[in-house]
Image 1 (spheres, helix red, strand yellow):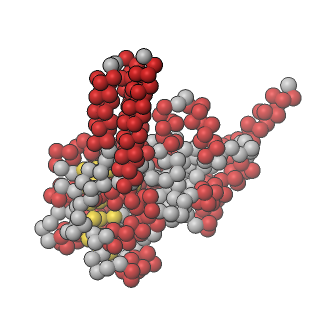
Image 2 (spheres, one colour):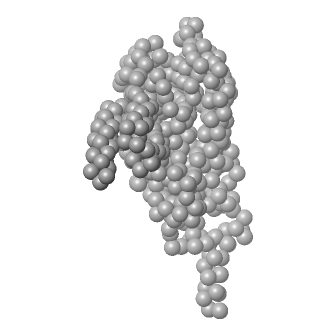
Length: 392
């Protein structure tokens, strides 16, 4: 009996070794990320193996286990990309940062790029003209200006000469100022919503007839902050959460038209969404001046001064390599079978898993470590309260 079990165990190990080697090769070859590798499927295979080994006969158990391994192997995504010829894509926010890099990257791949910018005579636009091919077109587009959106649509429609628009990449975005939600002025909440959400919705609505004609792709660059709470990003996170949900609903609405929708949720990357030191200092003064006297008294000048360095700390800890985001956006645009959600960057998949699957205190603990918000300083009124408690 022991000999039979030993032989069965060796057979299961052999099947597992062949399967794991083949699966790893396919996963590596197709650059499949861990979130798309169906970790739950691997755990299910382990359970199937245990059930087959201990509860079923050797022949039946091995047959079921082998079929389960084959099913998983077939389900692994294959990196089957569409040709770039005749693919026209509009990218918003190409003056600098991710949009700028994406415009260059897609142009190198042979895509017909419409790179929209805030300033057609700006440095970013001039660099794109100098470096990129003649296929790339610079489009003047402020996503908060309805007249510019209409003009851009008319211009692009004319250049397409009756053809559809293959893709829209909503990249334009602002982060505003980083501080406790109570301290942020309502004007900043409105600015974030206008650019990050309403701008994307307005551009989508205007360009959708062209996108539907091509049965193309709608890509929204959201943020990790769009589906997990990150301290001191209330205005930015709220706008990105709105964009994420908008993207999810539009996916359902556009299925019948053959348009595929994807949301990209990057973690921290070095882009120009972090404002200049001069602008941040000006914003800091404006926020301090706009606070009610009792609020300013409760928080205290010492606590309020700490926000000046938060932008620079976030920028310093962000990645300068935009490759993961560029690869995911290209996959969303050009793969025959794109994913709906992409999470490029360090912790971009791990943190949402923590938030969704673990108690909140676990997420809060890791958030303090990861986002470096474990500052010793407290608002003035809380410091006084702690001091009184200690004395009593």
